[in-house]
Length: 79
Image 1 (tube, rainbow, N blue to C red):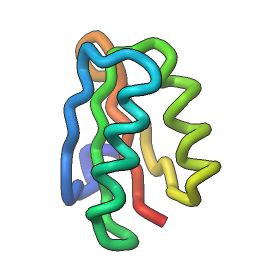
Image 2: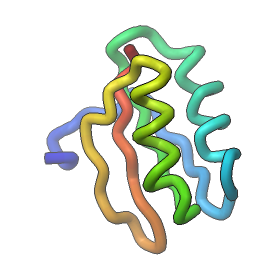
Image 3: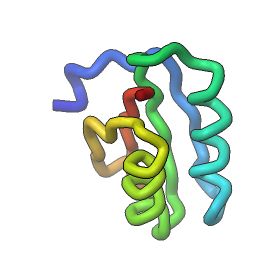
Image 4: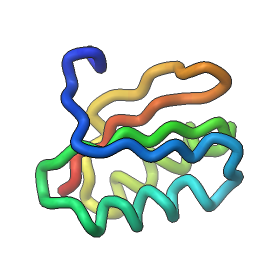
């Protein structure tokens, strides 16, 4: 599914620890238009919990989550 998703922007937060991946995603999403998709790459194990929670609280849609090297790739549609 994620291979079909067209991302408008990508942010590589590899190596950053909680809460930095979510904070960087929030900052990037602020400059994007509603409906655009951000791909966040994170290697922090806590991101598996933090990113879905952030999306739910901030009104964004987590449309896909896939494995990526040592971490995960999150596809977030701005709400």
